[in-house]
Length: 127
Image 1 (cartoon, helix red, strand yellow):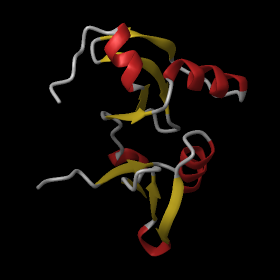
Image 2: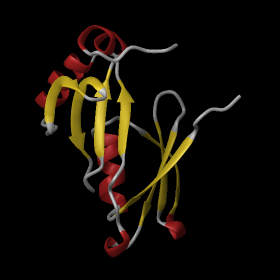
Image 3: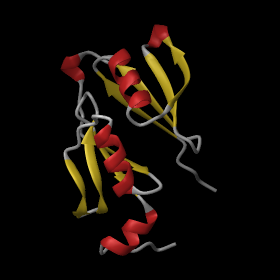
Image 4: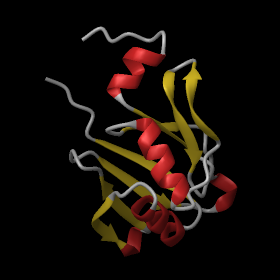
């Protein structure tokens, strides 16, 4: 068995990023390691993202994170009403159907749901 369980991404401001992931995405703080400038954040299924502050001159933001939600159109509407700014509304793209926003360091955050992915994109699951 193999299961992807943790991911580490560098950030330029640990407090700002921790607060954004908790406030916008609803992740919870699992634990913090202040002397390593690291926070472990968990989603509702137990997947952990470690955010770790690094100097801005070594920062890269060339990854994207996909989060499955119950309904991407409803999530987009609810979060937009809360003032969350999206790069684009739910739409068909190369990776399927969903909405996109960016975290404070510019990482792409992509939201999708299983029903819309099947109904509104050309992507089909091999499961």
